[in-house]
Image (tube, rainbow over all chains, first blue to last red; front, top):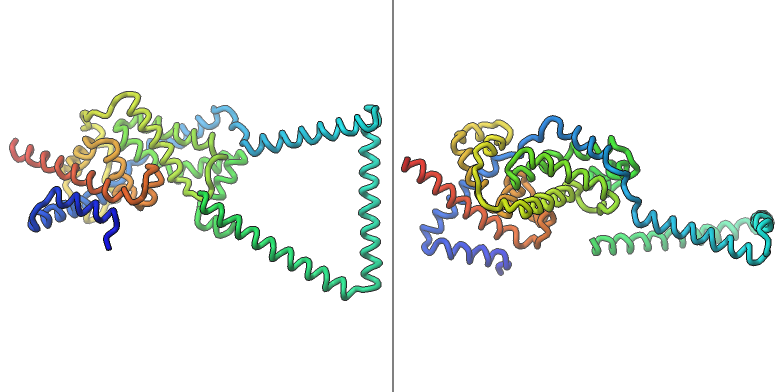
Length: 160
Length: 192
């Protein structure tokens, strides 16, 4: 079973050579030409080529930021603005914004300390079940992560 | 990540260059400058223009490094940029007609010295370069990439942005045109 490319080449050959002798001679001339062509090489660039390129690179304006960087910056700005407006609207006072933020941080610290205490108490009362439970959770997470990564790579290959 | 780096030897340099490391970009240029300049010279046929366009290609590559797809070979990406710039220039200046290429023929050397190389006389080499220079840019390009740069048909298809299945037929047609040019050249020499 010939591929479309082989069929196309065959058709081209038929156009150029009608008899077997002509065909053999044509193919031989092509082979000889290929041998000569394979001996050619690219010339070396001028000696100052690299220097010239790097000079152009240095003189060029700074690379524009990538779209992802612009999007990230926009998200940060919007989130910061939204948080400020929310804090301002809930307190009604600009001076209160800092206090609200500080209170949030303190509450977060208390939550973390509380969670730590709960874990310590749990460890003291049921160390083994806790170890097994945590191990199982960790293994499940790793397996899930591996699957997600594998799926992501496959999609990337197809897209490219 | 390790596997990707071993497949794409320039991956690390590209990452560093993206972070603004010019030494890394210089290393990338050093690695691919010869094929890029070579392709430009085959297409444009003057050293000054080839050098200028090759430099411009690297500058464009630097400015668009963030758009470069890491899974593709860096050299083919720059070659594709260079090719497009060359074709733009050829179109703009309407230089598709054949012209005198004597000087250019001397500027294109043969490969590394070998016994086989010595077997080809300078005259044959010149006539081959002469004949190649009279082909269309498309034909010169496919011959240069396949025979001079030893690229695979898949790589050539990536650079030329065509289906890989069309490359062998393009090569055959280009070779056939070259054969006819060579025969004319030989006949002319015999007649004179």
